[in-house]
Length: 102
Image 1 (cartoon, rainbow, N blue to C red):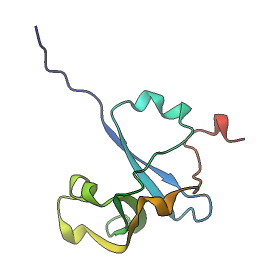
Image 2: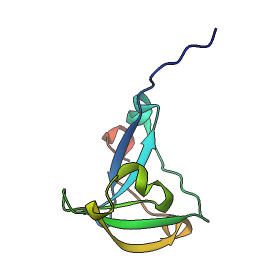
Image 3: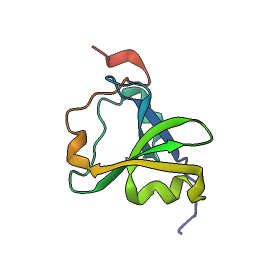
Image 4: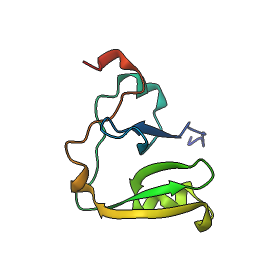
């Protein structure tokens, strides 16, 4: 009695507090939880990249091994920096919804 279903999955970007021009990218299959988000988790041992999205002219940070999931064409982005997830520890972002901002 297994039934295939299409679950909503979205990519969401969260502007960094210290530099709102840089946004952390997260993927979720539970977008209805986004209004209550209080933190983003990263793997301290995984590689992350800061990339320039050439079409949007925006800078994003995401896990290096997920870049191909978001960008089908390598010429759509430029890697600006590569670093370990541990570098992101303690960074703050602007919540999508300011309910719990303070």
